[in-house]
Image 1 (cartoon, rainbow, N blue to C red):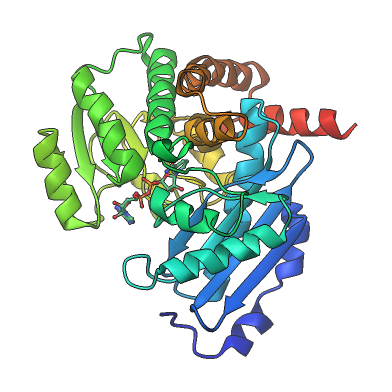
Image 2 (image 1 turned 60 degrees about the vertical axis):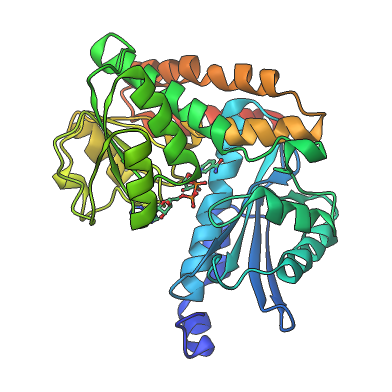
Length: 362
Ligand code: NAD
């Protein structure tokens, strides 16, 4: 399942408390259950604005360190996402180490639910990569601190369609800011990762008349989505220098890094993936210097969080969609603020989110 041979080596090399201090995390919970094979980490980043809500990702990490770094970065992103969206929520996230297609069982999910329950509501979970609404049903057998439950069971269902709508709004706002019109007809758009969110973004874009190119490591999904929406597919990972107007990262994070950034030919980056910039300061500055408009991920992918938040107070889809629509205006505000203050769009978004948290703290 996991390639780390010597666990002692990985602990020796990794200063986890230092990382938590640097990123301001409140708590990290390591879960291990021999019977079900569950190995999970729950990260609670900041609960100033409310309980830490964030999905659970199941991924076959190369080593434990990768899983720890991922959960620390993702949970911080949830704090920022909730704050910039104006929700009374803190930031948290969980990762389960393993292959979601072969290692996941009902008992494993129930055991995970027990761990979530032991935190007494400080952390509320939902689905992320490698998870489905049905997995959340199994988690719910052990805890009430779970969202993303199917609609027929009183929940808001898979949040990915609302996430996709929000990303689409953020992308249209980016087009308006960059080109003077939010019209995406004939724009060449690369969508990397056509899973739950990516596929729905492809639907919005093809319906509007954009020229969509899709990429995914899952070849059967790539073929299915390309046939369904009649769009071009591109196999392999040599996608960064494709001549496109918009690059939409919708797979995993850190795809904008030292190896890829100089290859980019797009004018806008707007996607669903969390933590798209490997280094949020260096790479945001570099994108700005290159004239590429970056729509901060935690700003435009907040639709799913809005949807699961709505579940806590009694689900209302219309309200969730209307609130998600506001991502269009907030994105434009952030772009204007960045220009006014001569800072990157990432910094402008961070500033607004941090302002809300500090105001609540004081
Ligand atoms: P998913 O697992 O359904 O889809 C991810 C897709 O990306 C899969 O089809 C996978 O094969 C593909 N992929 C993985 N690595 C790839 C690579 N290197 N190159 C190309 N394709 C690759 O996940 P999802 O729910 O669609 O989420 C996608 C991204 O959006 C994730 O980063 C997630 O954290 C983020 N996000 C999701 C939601 C949500 O509501 N689901 C909300 C906010 C953010």
